[in-house]
Length: 421
Ligand code: UD1
Image (cartoon, rainbow, N blue to C red):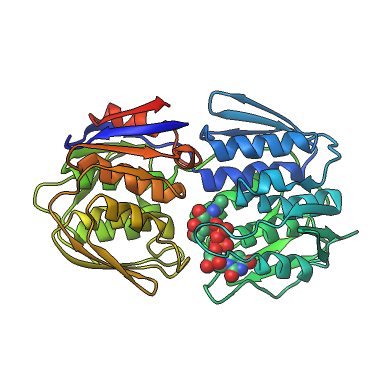
């Protein structure tokens, strides 16, 4: 089992290049099934989740070939329509095959994702949206079984739930609607940049989509789509994580291949905390001159502060003297990193869906365990400033979403290595 060992205390400096966005690449790879022609997707990060999607597509009979960070997807007339439990249990985002399979194969059999460490994570909005397009949906033996001889547009699909919109439900409905007969209007659509990136790819394939990136998306169904070439947008969560890596170590780094517009909420909170963030040409400069100040954070759907940055922000606030309150409004139970941070000396208590942090000067290195993708990033960040050595186990969580993280951090001067034992 691989572990990451960090000796804390190095101020980060230098330049880091951001990879393509995992959360954009996954639905876009799924969307490439919507045509029998070949698509080329560039700037795809080499991650465990992407590899799981590759295996899933191959299991459907699709040819998928990587060359560096470019991937060639040749769906042809693939015959599969199933995403089995073994894949879905390792990657919930497998659910984003539901829309494309239904549109292309007229049927789909996808394992129910079940709960995960950040909460129960229902899929009702995916099912409601696809049923509104005319799909017949049944749940049996732990599987979603969906069928539709011909999907039909629906001019009023409301994709809202108790926690607002859903990113992948919006993606699923959009991917199904592009080949449906007639017009579809998605109300309360998720407006995350990854939804827009998917819409841009679908548009290159010949889809007719307006309004992606806003809360109302209008789609006019077409008879068929062609293959397309597309470059995946930069990963905004990876960008935010390196900004915090600079902030937490009192460093001075340049971030390249990133889009500052996608991370306004993160940059705003960090500036409020005293971090200097400046865009010079194509670089984002992140520098810390004065001690960081505590700030309160509430996670919200885009353009609010992303839930996928909550754990990393908790790590930063745990070494920022003073009181800060971090409230989780997207996945209210997403606080598994807290008990591991406590092992490193973090003073925090949970009150409902908020973490109240009494920041201290320095954490102390310890053996800790990664519990989910972003929680593991928080432990790495904490390790970068902790006194002594931090050993993080179960780093496969990190590999789901961060491309060569320890290499990138070592390139910035961190004392970090991966060991096999
Ligand atoms: C995506 C991201 C994930 C991120 C999340 C929220 C991918 C691959 N993953 O996940 O990294 O943390 O957005 O920004 O893009 N909900 C329902 N019913 C549903 C679906 C969702 O009630 O049918 C709720 C969820 O429980 C949650 C909220 O809606 O409270 C948002 O979840 P959602 O946007 O669906 O997350 P994902 O798309 O799965």
